[in-house]
Image (cartoon, rainbow, N blue to C red):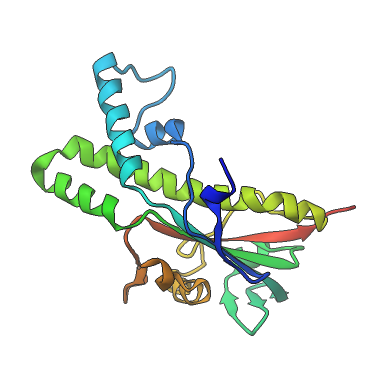
Length: 220
């Protein structure tokens, strides 16, 4: 994959925006989301061909964009994480998650509106099977875009003798309330990517995701 394909829109040292993210279809995770298990589920050649065709259609409709923002962690208490600038998240689980981290990385990605329009059309009765496969593909590709963003930054992070935590944490999990999505949305400025935050803190288009992970120092 060329650098041009993933050229950042903006890089101010803390934030990097990616106008286009092109990744391979995460087939195994898509099949898993569809309920198929390797060595446990038999799929006929006809079924497999149909699913593969719908996955390729989904990929043609998905326009992945993403962003990442690095912020120093100012304070971690047993139930609170405070980022530089005074942004505070109240969560015991998140505080434990960020243990020994000096920075936080906030991530966001979206698959765009076209795929959601196709899913809605098919779910309304045109082709429910296609809608299910499109939905699974969009979900897994959007999630994989976050992995790609982190992977693209790991080489530069290693040069700083730092590393990302192996996992991510999202608003709505554990005691990290979904309402924190408002702060994450604002910090990432996801409106620049055509993403809207509803009053109930849901992202639109639906196949849009955010997450946080920590950055730790490693021995040189």
